[in-house]
Amino acid sequence: MGLKRKTVVVFKPRNTDRAKSLRNAATPAERKLWKYLSKRQLGGRKFSRQMPVGPYYADFLCRELGLIIEIDGYSHETQQDYDAKRTRALVKHGYKVIRFTNDDVLNNVEGVVGRIERVLADMPTPNPSRRREGDL
Image (cartoon, rainbow, N blue to C red):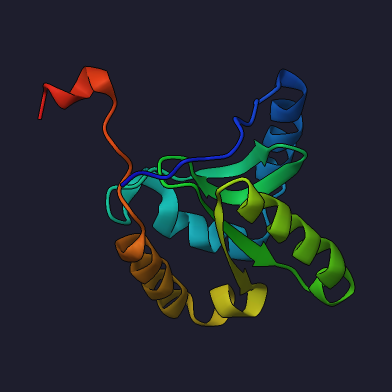
């Protein structure tokens, strides 16, 4: 059974400029985790960095599964209400959001990657498109 999003999120050009800027200003924790998420290293899944999702930017997004990975920076203590609101909005639109702290990634990246692998294994696989069904 595939994931069904309640709305289609449009990726607007104005958003992609900001996303590019955010990618260029990645934190040390984001750069470290990206080494594991890039090039389909986890379960063959494609992740993108700093992707616009509605009015928000996901640190890492696997579009195929609707999985968003967020790394909470050191200012997270002051942003907890905003982050909770943001997570609720993303979940409402069919995304699964998992969060880690900077310290989690910087001090235990293997544990973080292990948790992501478990989440990926537990997520339903999306249905193939009509065009590709005959190719299986």
